[in-house]
Amino acid sequence: MAVEFPGFVQRALTDDFSQFGKPAEDTVPGWLSTFDYLAKALERYDALANPIGIFRHADKGRILLPPNAPDPPAGHRLLELTKVTRDVVRIAGGFSGTDEATKAQAMIKAETGARKVFAAARLAKVEPQAATKILAYASHHTLDYFWGVTPTHLVADAVSSFQGTLTEAMDSVLSPVCFDIPECHVKRHKRAHQVLQLPARFGGGNITGQHTLAPAAFLATTCAVLRDPCVANLKGYLAKYVDAAYTALYASFKGISPMEAALLTKGFPPDTASLISTFTAIDLHTPPKRQMLQTKLTRATSRHQRLALRASCDASKVEPSPGQSLVDMLQVHLVTSRSQQSRILQSPLYFVENRVPALPFVYFLRYYLGLPPLLKKGRPTAPLVECGVAFIPEGDRVKPKGSNGGYVEEVCSLNHDTQATLCPSGKHGISCVSGFEARYRAHNMLTRATQLAVGRLECVPCTREPKTQTVLMDEFSAEECRALCPKDV
Image (cartoon, rainbow, N blue to C red; front, side):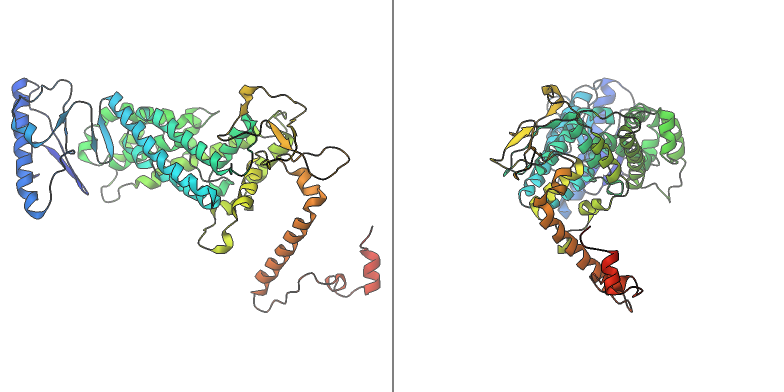
């Protein structure tokens, strides 16, 4: 086809065969001649492909005409071979056409992705840990290819829609139906999802933010295809789309200028001109990998977002307020400082030892993110008082889907001298006598696990909970040890 019809730019992409062309003259006779040429090419394609079992799909392979092109005459053979449109066509997974039609197709794509996300979220009823890992994978891979082949400013609404889908899906994972779900402050809810959007190595949940992923994917794709002569000839036309992607990417680096943000990308071209000049000059034998470039950009953004989150929770500079108490700020610094707890979110579930039962996992994740504890049905509750503020306006509250608990926290069932509530920090739960048994059980399990781990080492004797006299290398008698370390002080 390429030899017989040199008037078209033709590309075969796996099972897609695309042709691009224009008339020699932008006149009606020039377009009619192009229509004849295209009809001849389609007939030749059928003659070559049909005998070997390849047939063109009746609803695919449409011809997109630009606004200045006339319609093919009625009865023209091109209309018998294919369909003609002026709105949008799909090419290699992306859409090309008018801006409004492309935006509409992007929204449809986001809605399709939303159905897949909510299907994974339904798994949370029985396996919330697995559902969280699937959502993390979906956030990075469901639409990253589509974001990469569609200009960023045309998918802005779709990006916001899909990001809202991921947030709602994670809220459903954290809201089991057997509990009343309390409302929480908007600051607390926003901070929880900021932690979830961080990579696991930063203490996050690997739920990639779509406002970061979309421009990173488009820039990475542009870099990867600029060596193609057809694309390189369109670099002047691509510049405005690359500019829009850079603007969206640098918007993710909140609080710093684009120049400062460019320094954080570690070698990636800082602007459109340098990107085009750099990647059109790369040797064809070593083409850049789209996924590698995309990862470089998203990692740079994640590093900045982690630092910005920690700065917003710096107790030496930020005063505690409703939704962000001193304990909340300390919690953020703990979980983003190489916290080992994030292993629960990233460990492979192939191993049974890494799987956490459903409700304990939800309890843990809500505590980890600083969200209010779940409310057991029928238990007494009290209004949630944060930083001395007892009333929070409706506009400052977040009511997750299915929430019916109000802006309250559960009251401890034990008969304490004063009313004790189960706050998000868990400070009462860890000190209440009702938790002693679980604490001792966890202590024993931890010591047993440590004993087994050390016992696997060769030539290392291991004794669990040795005598105090043995720990002190028998320098003191048993009576002296009891006097030095009495049980009751």
